[in-house]
Image 1 (cartoon, one colour):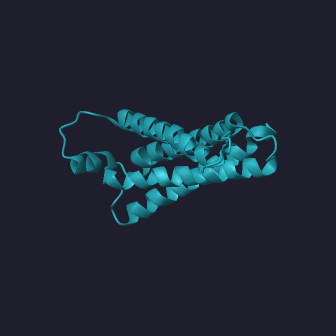
Image 2 (cartoon, one colour):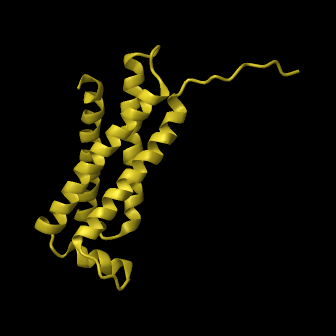
Image 3 (tube, helix red, strand yellow):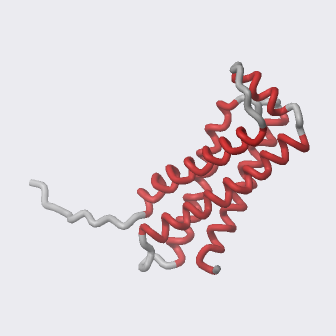
Amino acid sequence: MKKISLSIRFGFFTSALLISYFLILALFNKHINPVFSFFNAVITAFGICEAVRLKKLENPETFTYDEGFKTGVVTGFTATLMFTAFFLFYATEINAAFLSELLQTIKGDFNVDIGMVTFIVAVMGLATTVVATLTVMQFFKKTRNIPQNHL
């Protein structure tokens, strides 16, 4: 459990940032515009980056790519699950008109329910997690490049 406690902790921290961002957008009625959800990737990548950075600082000699990747994935999956649960609660209990406002913003004649939208939010979060973890790990992996003399 100690191995993933850092990831879980940063997952909760990242989900708190995602929820805070969503609620700030809701204050200005911008949460119905899907364009603003692109910043969620930045927030997720930041949380993953910090978790992997601290994991590498704990044991820099034994840090491996696999260990960093696992840390990032667990961090992002935890944040995604927490945010998705909040999103479902918000759309069903806090603002019941949210789904219809969101679909009007998209201007599509979609026949979807809250379950489908919540599933899409979860899948987008999980995909963002994998891409952000692969990106972040490029900064933290050990290089095996052999220095060469350039004349």
